[in-house]
Image (cartoon, rainbow, N blue to C red):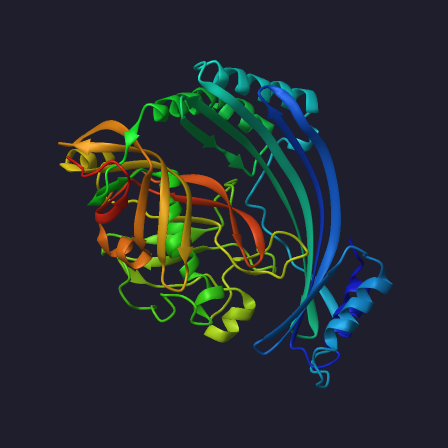
Length: 468
């Protein structure tokens, strides 16, 4: 996007007042969005954007700015303005730029941007027809397909030889949303498979027809569900999207963004037990073609498989360059941002609890009375304490080892520490669920995940009285 010679000039301008690290992040993004409301095209459009962000670090300080003007004059002016935040003498002079080879772990054989709009519309209409055809009580069906291709170029300097990285991100996501109504009851269901992949995966690998039908069926089922009982009970949480509790209540608390400034309940936990001894957990940005994967992070560090918890012991954090300085830890490939308008920081990618030795059916069979949660809606978390509440969008009663009637209005209330220590069963059926995660550096695509687990006791909120 810019020449090596211009990058060298901009980096030297940024480092003129004593910065010990400078970085230029450039991106060009082409995106397409299609939205259908009850089978009719509501919005359709393409968008192209480009810009650059410049960051300068000096010890534990950071200054960041961005521009959509990639001309030499604009980039040099931005670097000069940012460098004025420091008042020291030059410590680094960049004399050359070396291109670093980036390993491609996300191979794509066909591209979403090559698919005609008409074909994507027909695909969404088919999904909508299947969902709305489930039952007359389905009053609204909203389907969308969003994809983008992002070209990224990074120049970084913390010595005389600056490094140049080039990478590409291509992602697509199908979203299904159905609303059912009966009397004064309203229920909704959301499905959102996403992938770093091409059209063949969405059309021929993903069973989108079954997913569209399931979307409608779950909505109707929950319309007939009774209110969830309240109290403290054993709770079994299904694999895949059930991992959102670990992501929100524990994962964010293991990001260096929080731990480096002691804003996390786990800030001083390296080497200490924070979970049941049967719990291990990873964040893995190297899983080929997964929704949260990247070849490199937004600082140029190769994506890695980082273990966070090993047999209940905290063994690592997710570390970016700036917070790595505070923690005296090396960055480990997890620095991400929504786009060039955001300064990067440590973020999750594909975060999951590792498989255990149990079978999911045995965990349910061995639970005499409790709640079985298979999907979650919204929730809130206080990262400094890890306290949370999550609403379950799909939950059931477990009686005598069998999954029985569905319940609505189920809320799980607790803390990350409590959940981790109270996990007493872990199955071997790990699965992932795609979502979008918001934090200091904007919204980024992530996978949450886990096998089926059981929390031996947790507070369950609901209006259905006592569980019997």
